Image 1 (cartoon, rainbow, N blue to C red):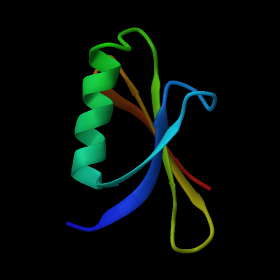
Image 2 (tube, one colour; image 1 turned 120 degrees about the vertical axis):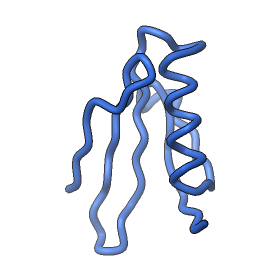
Image 3 (cartoon, rainbow, N blue to C red; image 1 turned 120 degrees about the horizontal axis):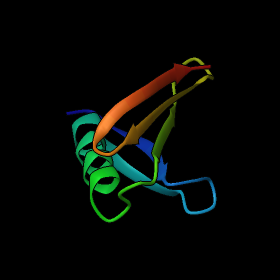
Length: 69
């Protein structure tokens, strides 16, 4: 599994950097959005290899948004 540097948090103020595989990050986001942060959105982002940024958003344990810039 390839690992990348991701930022994960409920907003930019509490975002923390993690070095994980996509599968590990996805599991953590599902757990946080449906668990201790229930009712809060969980944001994940990482830089892609072309200078852009990929972003995901989970709510209540479900991926609801994805974007690339």
